[in-house]
Length: 239
Image 1 (cartoon, helix red, strand yellow):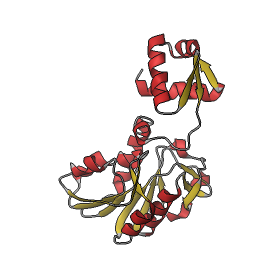
Image 2 (image 1 turned 60 degrees about the horizontal axis):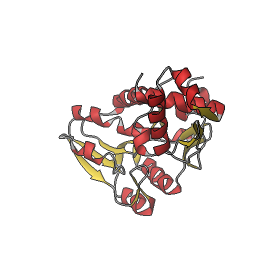
Image 3 (image 1 turned 90 degrees about the vertical axis):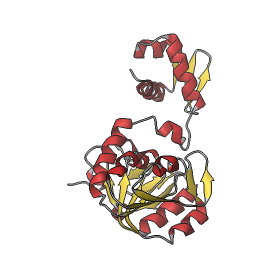
Image 4 (image 1 turned 90 degrees about the horizontal axis):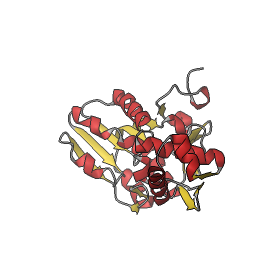
């Protein structure tokens, strides 16, 4: 079993039980005590759990850091990214939002010609700069350390200089009311980006469905939702 799979299973167990003992993890996952301890240490470092004597309890956090996000739901993100490629053509100007799901697109972009890519993702910039077929622009602004996103008014005003053929946006939650993020400064940037695009695509795996975060930045009808599963009718899928 991959370590990422164990992390997800442990989190699911703790969510169900609210707290869990080390021996329960060993029995449920059929792993050694040493492996269970390492996994719990990792999850505590990522502020997902709190270690207590003999086990662990869940820690509710507002937003996961980008390092952890890039480790989870990998298969789902790959499916989303490959579906999103169907919308990309040579010579387009593309906005790529900060995030792990939008970041999953990057390795596939080398097959297109003469792209212009604008991003607010400091975390993804090194991977984007490896592309030999694209001009890459990084927005200025306030650096959000947890996600590596450039956010706030400076980043928002920087977007007003651009127009995009495609805008790819991630979200922390999507429900019948729209798309959500826990950060008001990031919402400013997302809202401005979707205004600048001829076509807006929201990239969300199914774990984001029917989740509501702090602030809404878009209505459902403002773009097309791409996911790893069929889109529920409440989110604009076929009825």
